[in-house]
Amino acid sequence: MKRIILLCSALVLNLSYAEESAYSVKSGLLFSQQWGLYVTNIVERDGKIFGVSIDRISDGKSIKELHDAYGLKKISSIEKELWEQFAFYEKSVTSGNSTDVDVLTGATINVSELAESVSNAEKGIVKSNCYELKTGTAYNPAWGLYIANVIYDDDKIYKILIEHFDKNGENSKEKYDNYGLKQISSIQKDWWQQIGFYEEWITQHGVDSVSYDKNGMPENVDMLTGATIGVADLTAAVANAISK
Image 1 (cartoon, rainbow, N blue to C red):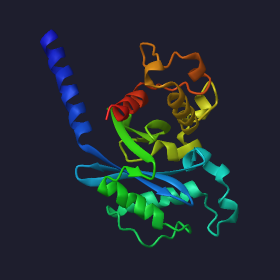
Image 2 (cartoon, rainbow, N blue to C red; image 1 turned 180 degrees about the vertical axis):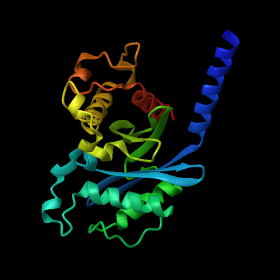
Image 3 (cartoon, rainbow, N blue to C red; image 1 turned 45 degrees about the vertical axis):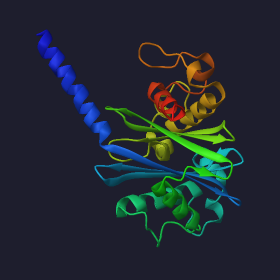
């Protein structure tokens, strides 16, 4: 019986490794004097584009972090916020399985810098102006692929951004309130809000400051005020990025 259990455990581990090794992540950085810092990840699985994530940091805040507070929707001819137009571009690249996307019906913004940021990811350009990007990953067989983008400004950590793709290629952060965590959360915050809190906390305190219970849930009292989700995979991805 013990041998059967060990063989089953080994099989699960091998399958998990096989699933993880099927993914690869290309990352790129682009600094724009006018708009700020673009951070791009291209996730490939089995040689094809599985998902694309683009975020932009201006004055220390990212587009996905600002969400609807950015304020583009009220002046947009297609009534879409900036994060929605970024998401449309991402999906256009993914669905076409090509980084060469010229025509957009779901975005009225100038996409030339988005295209350049994707190109930088393809080329592996991770330094721009005084900034440098290190990207780490962690894979959970149940939840999918976690990506940590650690941005340095003159060798000091400036910002940490987390992305997550489930097994269907859906970006969890871009689901926003449709993720459905808020309604069952003890702190009434959805996944994207808790991730945003975690990003700020881990930037300020570092990976060595996180403590866990036996289920991988955070025990840090100050973190629990803004995040009650399990953070072990998130922290593993951040540690992986910093180690590079």
